[in-house]
Image (cartoon, rainbow, N blue to C red; front, side, top):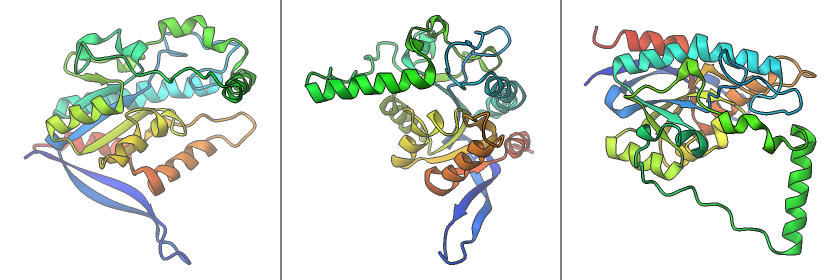
Length: 265
C-alpha cells in the first residue's frame, strides 16, 4: 500500500500547569485512505476573476486580504493540488450549491436533492431577530451586499480549477457518504477562510471531525480574515492554534508536497 509520510502538528494542553504545547509527529497516511480538499477558493480578486467591490465586504473582505489569498492559491494550493493528483489522492472541492451546479459532472449524484432551507420565521420575536441579523450583517458588509452582482458569477478560482478526475461536494451528509464508500479516513484541507468556512461550513473541519475523520489543515494553504487595524497575521495564527487544539491538526504545505514526491521511491 502506498503511503505518504507527513509531519503533523497539534497542541497538547497537559499538564495544565506547564503544557507540552505544540508537538509534531510523522504520520504514515495510506494514499487510498486520504483525501485532499480545496474549500471555498473563489474567483474574487484573482487574475481573470471578479474585481473586489469597493462598496461591500465579501469573501476575504479587504483588497489586501484578497491579494494575499490570490497568492496563496497560485503559489501554494495549486502546487499542492498537482502533488495530490500526481500521487493518486482523492481530490475534492467543497463548494456551495450555486457553484456546484456549474460543475454537475463532478457531483456524487447529479440528481441530488437541493440543500434543505430553514423554515420561514413567523412569530413576532423571530421576525425581530431576523431583522436584527440583517441590519447587523449589512452594517459590516455593506447595505445590499447580498444583491452584489458578483454572486451570480462566483466560481472556483482559475488557478485551482477542478479537473475531470476530481469530485465536488456541497453537504456534510453527501461528503460523509462519498468518503465512507471509498474507505477514506483522513482529510487534508486547504482554502478559506481559516477562522470561518474552514471551520464551520458544511463538509469543513468541525463537521467532519465530529464524524470521526482525521482533519489536517495545511498552514500555508489558508489564511484567516485579517483586519487593517490589527497586527498582520494575528487572526491566522489564532485560527491555526484553534485547529491544533480543538478541530484537528496542521501540517506544512512544503512537507506535503515533499511527501507526495517521495511516494514510491
